[in-house]
Image (cartoon, rainbow, N blue to C red; front, top):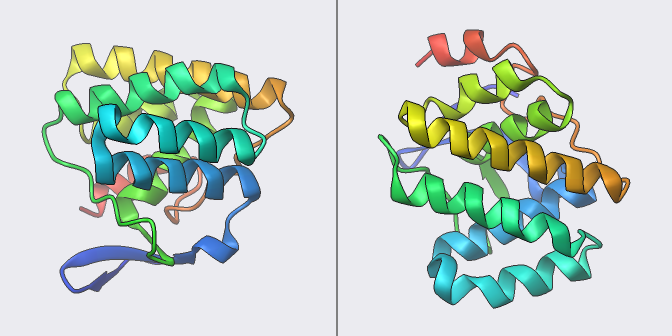
Length: 161
């Protein structure tokens, strides 16, 4: 899908309906976290992930990743509210980074994450993304990637900015 602008926010053309169950559960959890922060959003995020079949051992790496993105970013992520049906470009990139980490494509995952993070935070976030991908894989949940329009070819996507 190509990137477009909707009210000043970039969108991908993807909607929640076009995501896999694991992607949708992760994205909705990320949106709930974005709305309430780690302290306020943790219970709602945990419940939504468990209900979606995402294992409890995925929670710590997810919260680590989100905490790093929240605490040490060079540019804030555009995270939509839970009720939005469209997928923002930052949300698609984050899903793609997680898919790349799960597939063992660490360089591709780091290429996306470095868009938001300085080096030290990047290392922590990349490790958390790998751990999250591994927890999902153990549960038989796979993230396909390619939601930001470039698959694992992120340098093309990043160059477009």
